[in-house]
Length: 226
Ligand code: TMP
Image (cartoon, rainbow, N blue to C red; front, side, top):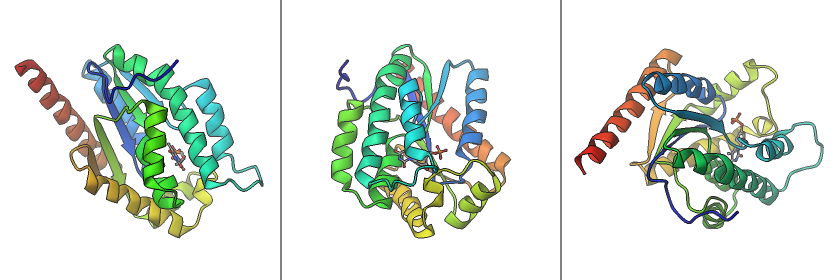
């Protein structure tokens, strides 16, 4: 199966949540999924790396902290891209074609932030390889949960048992990742909306909810006016 070369599927909506470690993304995703379902939308909640059986196996290989074999940056990039290719073809595109909202915990912006800004791999190579892996599929809207590195890492350390191989990287690596996300947001402000996640969880939750529901209503009004 080859990827069709379309940027977006016209029926469904592709929403992603991004952020550095400990930004509270996964909790906020669960809540947003519930809110959207209550509002009557059909929602597919998924994550990267992962989403299909093979992609989840790649996630396990990529994030396992057990192996002593150092992982080369290029290997890391190719693993996340291989997982994405499976995920887009078998889960994301079919759900978009059915008209669902696909709510995805991380996507290509994480590759640019972690493997590009964090590991120092070429952004243009990553963009090219990502286009090959996805057929050019890009989220309609991305919410970037921003949190200072020291606070995010402390949150992750408190959530014992959840630490993966990348959590153990140096603080400077995580600083580059955070700045990378903010740089991506400043380059694509129409798609990537930055939310300050260094606030109480209910405050962040309300802001995300307002932002996403507002964006969906505007999109529906525009579609109705056509
Ligand atoms: P998390 O979703 O629980 O935060 O774990 C996913 C980890 O995988 C996180 O450390 C970021 C990393 N990752 C990359 O390095 N590149 C990618 O493209 C993606 C999707 C995730």
